[in-house]
Length: 87
Image (cartoon, rainbow, N blue to C red; front, side, top):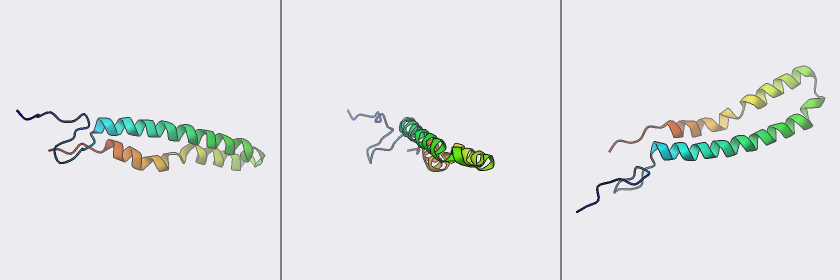
């Protein structure tokens, strides 16, 4: 009798297709590592260089540092939200 269940990742006989749940798990781990690393980098930049700048430059730098982390994560978020392929 042939086995009819799929792999945990939503695979089929033609190849292993990653399911949305697995993509979300991988994406979440990658996001946590990236954001932690970026936060340390942003704190080092803010502590080292921005404190000596004028207030307007400081404000703009904090805005940019607070929002720029989104740009490299957008492709990852799109990949995580991609719907599963239907057989």
